[in-house]
Amino acid sequence: MRQTWRWFGPKDLCSIDDITQVGAQGVVSALHHIPNGVVWSRAEIDKRYAEIGTRKDGTPSGLTWDVVESLPVSEDIKKQKGDWREHIANYKISMRNLAGSGMEVICYNFMPVLDWTRTDLRWTVPNGGSCMRFDINDFAAFDIHILERPGAGADYTNAIADEAGRRVSAMSEDEKKQLSRNVTMGLPGSTESMSLEDVQAHLSEYGRISRDQLRQHFIDFLEEVVPEAEKLGLRLCCHPDDPPFALLGLPRIMSTEEDYKHILDAVDSPANGMTLCSGSLGARPDNDLPGMMERFGPKVHFLHLRNVKRDNGDIMGSFYEAEHLAGDTDMVALIAAIVREERRREAEGRKDAIIPMRPDHGQDILDDLGRRAQPGYPTIGRMKGLAELRGVMTALEHAAHGL
Image (cartoon, rainbow, N blue to C red; front, side, top):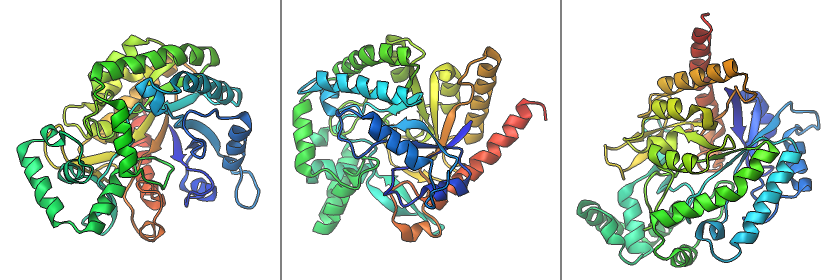
């Protein structure tokens, strides 16, 4: 695996100098300052390459921009409303500009309204560190009682709805505002939450869109962009839903193995692939991560290696971001499956035999606790995760070569 590191740009508290010290070989980044649906110009893309390639003192960093995460799919495209056709045309232009700069891998997602969703961004773990957590009872409290989405109560079990009512009645106004900010913070690279009015407006525009409708909108999008990606030599890879189940009355359509099979079969192309995120998919007990790596291996273009610990076996349940080797996903078995896939690609002579990977998320520990960096992206916590993953990778790769 090629070891990469997510960087949110010059304002990221983790600097390019820091990334060179943690041992990453490349960088995963995006132009978060450009609004969704707007073209990424070659000038802006080249500027990001230069930023990644330069230390604070002006000397070369030795780092390369290996993966775009993400080239966003606008809400208009997902809803097929407003300027969605123009946004698809702009998406293609951005793809051409990225390919012209040498980029080969583009990660994106198709989650409606909210990106990753958590109810607590700095939940304390027993060792004194902190991590992100999704609590289904707190989310229900937000959905039913703070957002006041019509019919929300029917989307939860009686036990969850009752507990949500108890919790919200015990919250102060400040605590309710903090929960709202946490839930709507799911916009990587941004420190701005959507307002409740923004969320309500999006939900109103989606209306009662069905799972089948959203799936078809996704396929329509892929039928437009995948042929272009093929011509450009790009590999597109869809990130799974996070968490991997329906939220706010809207379907999520990239949560399970069946979801991925449906989309990858519908637009069958080497350019239409998967970002295998072990944390997002691992939040569901019915997702078999090592098995998914085996079955989807040829179309896995990017890897997010992280772990979560579920509170119970419920499909729609609570979880927190665990240490990379300590959650519910068998990370050793997953990495073993990745190593086998890379060996298969190597034998086939594929130029993409080495799959880019990044240590995703991590717990805030030591000096992270005072930095207050982008939630989920601590420097030391991710470095610890990368070191643990690197140890497993090295042992398994040596074993694969009979060393």
